[in-house]
Image (cartoon, rainbow, N blue to C red):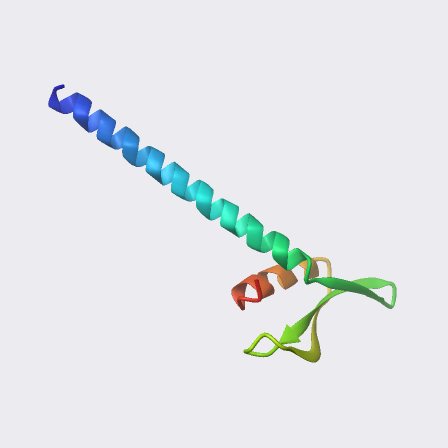
Length: 88
C-alpha cells in the first residue's frame, strides 16, 4: 500500500468512528427524552393546557411542590428542564 491509500483508510476509519459516536449520543438523548416525557403531567386551567412536573429534592425524594410550564411550548420546556436538572 502506498501512502495515499493508507491515508484514505485512516480517514475513512476516523469518519466511521465519528458517525458511530454520534449515533450513540443521539440514542442516549432520545432515551433521556423518553424518560422525561413520562414525568410530565398535564392539567387544564381556564380551558388551557398547563404542563407540570413534581419537584424532587437533591436526594431524589419528592418535595410535594410542582413546577408549571404554561403556554404552547410548555411541554418542551418541561422536558428540557428535566434533562438540564438531571431528573432523568
